[in-house]
Length: 419
Image 1 (tube, one colour):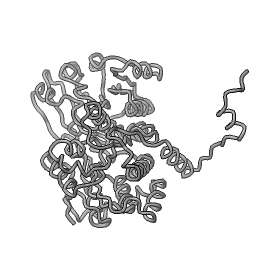
Image 2: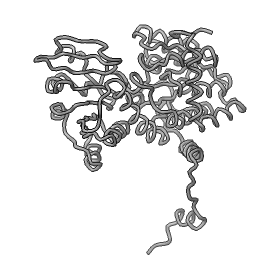
Image 3: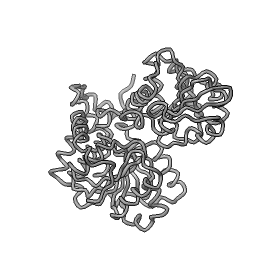
C-alpha cells in the first residue's frame, strides 16, 4: 500500500488511541455497523484531506466499512498524530499520507497523492483539496460527483467559488449542519482551544484578560469556556449582530486596537486574514500570548510580527516562540499561528466529534445516492440527518425527551384555533 507516515513503528500506540476514541463515539459506531452490512459506498474512490487524529481515524474506518476506496492526507501540517497515521496504514489498511510538521512542499505532495486515484468523492477540512482540483488538477475534477466540507473556513471559500460561478461540482456543507457547528464548533473548539493554550504555556486563566477575536460558533465557545475558568473576557467583532449578542451574553466588546493594550491572551477564531496586525503588536504588553484557532495560519500577521522583532527565540516551550520587541517587550506566539487546539493539544474530544463524523458519513451516503440531482452549488445537509444523529446521541447519553401528542400535532399543523 502506498503511504507516507513518519514512523510505522508507532502503530501500536496509535491503535490504542483510535480504539479509546471509538469508545466515546457510539453514533458513529452505529453508522459503521450499518455501512458494513449495506455497503452504500461500494466501489467509490474517495479522497479525504482531514486532520489526521484518532477521531478522524474512526470516520475513515466507517467510510472504508461502507466500501469506499479511501485515501487520506493531512489538512494541516501540525495537526497530524503520527501514531494514528501509522496505525491507519498498518492496522486498518487505509492509505495515509500525513506527517506532523511536514513542510509546504510535502503537504502538496500528499494532496496530489490522494488525487492521483481520480476520486469520485472528496472530503475536506479547509477546501485545499477542492481548491487544487479547481486549479492544477482540473482534469481529475471531471470525475467528482460531490464533495464534503467540514470547516467554517472551507465553506466560506466554497461559497465564494459558487458566487463566482467557478464551482465545478456539488459540495455538501457539513460544517453548517446543526449537529456539527452547534456542538463541534462551540463546545469542541471552546474546550480544545483552551486546552492547547494551557498545555503550551501553563497559564492560569483565572483573573487573566483573554481577548477572543470573532464571535461565531467557535468564538462563542471559546469565550464561554474562558469565562467559565475565571478569565475576564473581551470579544472583538466586525459584525454588529454578533457584537450585540456578545454584549448581551455579558462580554466586554471593543475594537482590537483597544483590546491590544490590556489583553494577556489573544485567541483568533474568525476565518479571516490579519485580524491581529502590526499596529496591534505594537500596543501589546510584555508577555502577551497570541494564538489562533481558525483553520489557516493567516489570522495573525506573523510577517509583521517578525518585522517588529529584534530577536526570535524558538521553542522556548513546546509550541511557543518568543518574539522580543523594542524596549524588551516579549510576545509569545503559539504553534506558529496554526490551530492551537490541534497543534498544542489533541483537538476536539471524541464525544463531540461523534456527531460531526456521523453527520459527515451520512452526508457522503446522501451525496452518492442523490448525485444526479445535485446542482454545482453548496448544499445544506438534509434536516433528516441532523435529527437522526441528535436522537441517537441523546439515547447514547441516556437522555429522554417528550413526544408530541396527536392533539399537539394537529394544533401545530392548523391555523383555525385562536384566542
